[in-house]
Image (cartoon, rainbow, N blue to C red; front, top):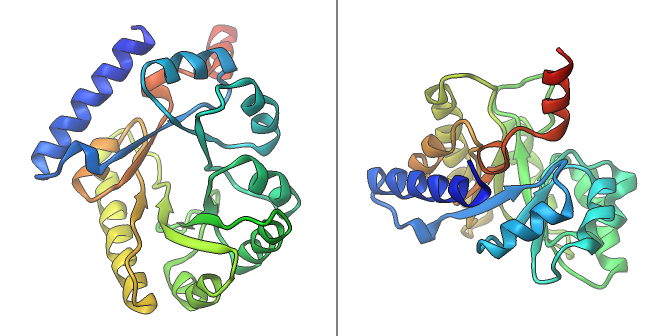
Length: 235
């Protein structure tokens, strides 16, 4: 299928999921994940109306973003190392993967140097997977006020990556828990948090049903990544 056909299919599935959840499709933001995709593909996606894109690696983004249309917005969605914070603050409009107070403090420092305020999402590892980054819920609640007090940080919500499963329904408890955790965070802060970034190509419809405001779609939009295709061909 073509990129345009893939996007139309995703939009139809988004509408169907929103109908089931009694939500308006415009309450949801589609973030196109462009890991391993060239600037030409990003440009083609932008010509279809997509404006928000996500990258997992700072170095790849540093090379790619200057070659893409300047009107696009970029979010960082991968694990961020402290020594990459300066570049991340300069390249991205949001960092979705803040997973410690120390990282938040470093982002705050670099944002101050750049004379900007950095919107962030706090990443939560709800299943406690050793292979994934992210806060444990209680640790997040313990550090939340300190992060929120950083002058150059704006906490906009939470993000999660549930354990992979061929059955999207297995993600539902994790999405539901993230929604509940967001409500707990709002009580701690005494203020609303607008975003729940959850749901990817294999489970975004369930995420929408559970309250996602942002879904991160790569494979369903662009097809298998180039590296994955190469491995499959070698096998």
